Image 1 (cartoon, rainbow, N blue to C red):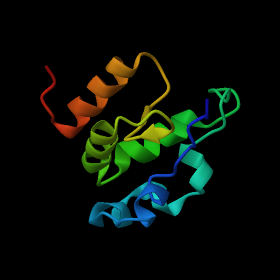
Image 2: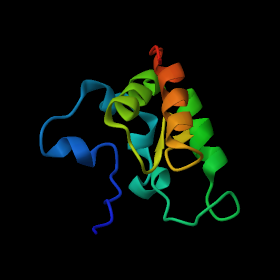
Image 3: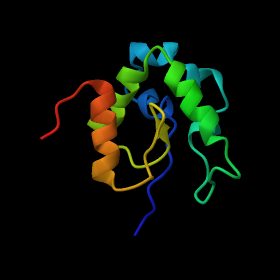
Image 4: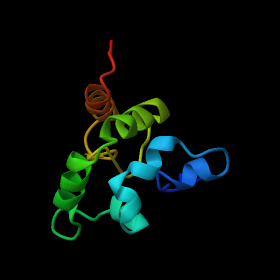
Length: 104
């Protein structure tokens, strides 16, 4: 069984296309590992509050949440939400709410 690779939001588009909104993302201005901490890092060893603040001020947070929701992301912080925190259904619901999507 292979372990899924961690992906930076911009890397996944490199092979196919880059969405216009990614150029305006505030996370594009920080170290790529900022939004993708190693497993086991938590609030004591990783600045998750800083991620949430950066994402909260990001002008493309809604687009980011939609991308995470559409891609059912499992790793990293997307739109200020930790993809690995809580149940996947709860994480998906948070992204849907941020993106303005209706969830059944």
